[in-house]
Image (tube, rainbow over all chains, first blue to last red):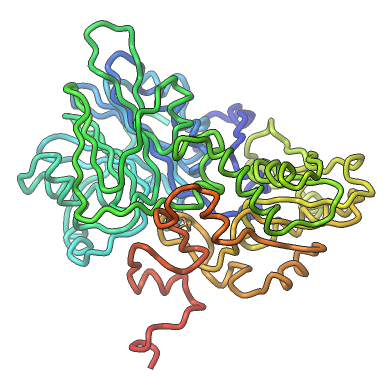
Length: 161
Length: 345
Ligand code: SF4
């Protein structure tokens, strides 16, 4: 789950200063999510997204993920851990394209599992979408009902852990 | 949930933008999101713009490249990759970024700005820009306001690293009391996943914050923190300061008492866990063992924004929730509130 143990030495200046490792919950409200998106055909979008998320690490330290689009094809990698733990040079090299979406998450609801990590992927008749959000609930009753009836598949991570 | 709603609308025959907008109309709450599609990149904020979302431009030397856009929760994520801040995504706005450029759609019927005030006080990085200034500047101003509202006679002012520091500097500037660092944060370890030993745990906070004995000994200290939620950490900090030789420890909080849980994406505890929901300021002062304790006033917090006070959410201080919260969701965290008459009979 934590591929790069040596990355634990990375400075994370925005981690909660009061957190005793994982012993106690930080005595602060915690931010639910950080999102990032980029459209930049001339750049290494995966790497820029990585650094964008790295700057947003304080908004969520539980999981991180990046989805890239190359000519409509989606590549996704997400896992539990800090941005610097989830991604390595090798993993970033497998991602690429003209556009990317990234997310750092601190989970408020639901269990801490990789399936809850974002971006979320959904296949549609127009191609795959990748969504990174900070959202808590939806109230419209018919939304809840319809959404639950819908079948959609969450792609497994496409790159190796 | 929103991903599914968008996908559903697409599969029902709608194009990306129509599908997204119809999905947003069906889902309420606080959301800022970024959606990648094969045809373009979308950035969206809820009608109240509770969570921030900014747009940046990334210049390129490469020939024949369309304008390159970046979307991010905060401007600090633009800075790190060398992108220029362009503007915020507006509450209730959708931006659609393609080869052709950036198109804007105001999809919400009644957008009304209610930015989370806690973003300004604590969550967002101090080097992020909101309202055309760094949050460091805002946080210095609330420290000044705090010094105006709750002065006290002490030798040194210090902040709880890192989040209490800008307000502590503001407090010092306003009051004329010297600012000092008395707690040093261990900056180079990152987050550790190794559990400390029992004796380390009992020694309190030292893994992350180490008190400077020679600065603290014999001094009357005023320490500023950005918020006080449960009080457990504050207690440990005060204990460490006293053990290091401080003769008096006064605490100032650069936000009002948190009395209500957040339902818009921030993980505060349920209401019964919030120390200020059940205890008076004096009781809290006693519990965390300080000589005096004062919070910033709600008015002072909003005044210091230098913006329209109605353009912020401050529900965790007031219980005045700008976006209606469904009863079921409410009940999960608001156990101290009276239930509406219809359900309490
Ligand atoms: S309730 Fe508090 S933390 Fe939540 S959005 Fe409003 S101001 Fe921010």
